[in-house]
Image (cartoon, rainbow, N blue to C red; front, side, top):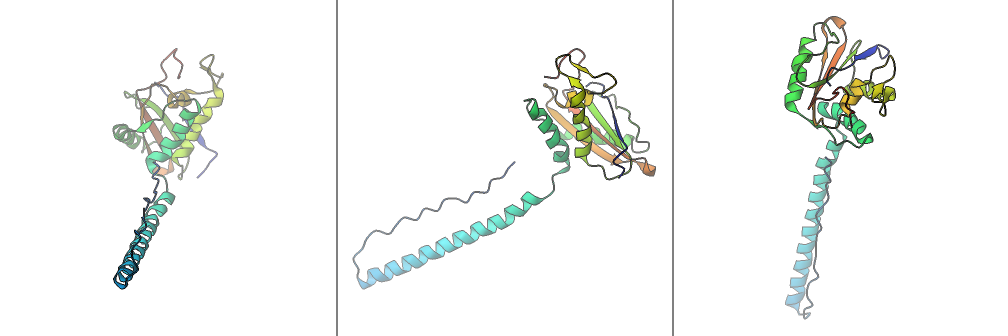
Length: 213
């Protein structure tokens, strides 16, 4: 991957599963007379309780053995796009976006159109849209999102404008207050033309004259 050749263009309109073992309550046996039958009964009850406790601990151990490794599995494709964008939104106190399969299908449909040329052209669809191109292969969704979010340094909130000669529309779309859903796609273009990624947003942001939040 040629990490020195990445570019973006301005957009147009723009769980934690906590496995907690249940509490095991063991009540003491009531006092009894120490007759031989009672002693035998108590002996059997203690063995029964010990066996129950051992079985309980074995089940808990097995449960953790199943759950814990899943926590180390790689993030899903959706989360690789979603998590860094929601981190950017959280930094300006905006509610997180949710992944939307309809938007993801639209993004994939359009990315497939760009597979032959990898051109940085927008789909001109009904959604907000951010696009990314990187030379070569091996680009990750987080790298595309990082390129968009880095535009934050060029955005002046008080003047609601970008620095001269810079772009910030990708960033403002990501943090746009009324945007709720996102769906993204990535393709490796034919003929070694690079990698193309796109995210679509609904409702769209970047309305002229309005601040993102």
